[in-house]
Image (cartoon, rainbow, N blue to C red; front, side, top):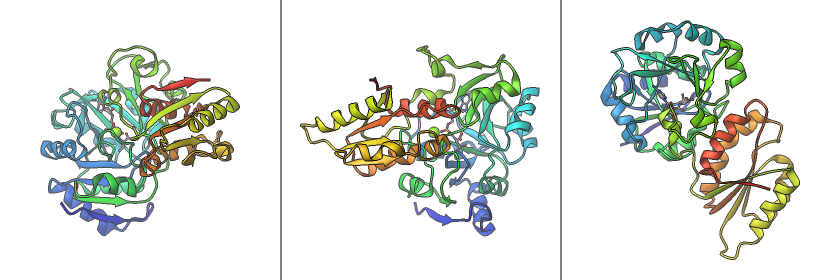
Length: 348
Ligand code: TXA
Ligand code: MG
């Protein structure tokens, strides 16, 4: 398949491109598009054959449900039933934006879109290009992140191109995503409402909005039960090299990583995900990626997936990462990093 690739301005996209993308969706095709979190791989959420194509293009297990993206709050009533008061409260505070709500699905959403579930995930993104595209495409876009299943989510157009070229009809590139981590997911079909995936909208913000909330222990605690968001059970976000997270005080972390890089009899290619303050301290690594200042959590989140992909591009065999346990986004950042590392963490 020949993939059309169009660059647009993130605030004022060429409407001819947007209209063309809308036509592709209406005729059953797939378009990758930018959101404020990560790039999405979109198809018509109400058309089960479009959903089937999404699973195929991603190489994704079909029990893993898709998020339905809308471009106005009222559109929630077409795809969800029994919309509770909490949805309105959350929408007022966080929509459009990086929050996904799980609701009871309406009959108009095919089960192919929801991975066989009776619930549906709904998100109203804030990115201007996403909003214009969703509206041009008829209003209901099913979209997972636009990566090949198992790879880090794409946070710029070239990531999407490298995963999806030849597999989908069109890619809209509006430059890097602002946030860089997938949306927070909250389930509003249970009481108390339950946070299923951490993201930019953090636990404190949700508590301020709703009062008491629960958290999926399989994700946030030590429970070995299956996560309630099916996608959270897969080891995705992963680079090809073996990733180890090193936790502890800064000097101890640097010296541990340096020791591991130097003690490398097999001559493996080594890389480090380093905070800006430490980048000069790993001279023998083949690649040192600067993830940003240790206290600039917005930048760390924004760069995380790109740094993992850089390690792949440079064919790094062993990757060491410092820990980025920051106040507001730390939980979301470390949730992704720990999964990328397959829970391989060393305390020094
Ligand atoms: O920021 C985002 O959410 C991005 C952009 C494109 O909007 N999308 C995204 O989609 O991250 P995806 O497919 O990579 O992750 C969706 C997650 C999966 O873990 C899936 O299992 C969960 O949402 N999910 C979807 N529908 C669900 C449902 N009805 N119940 C529980 N979890 C659900
Ligand atoms: Mg994903």
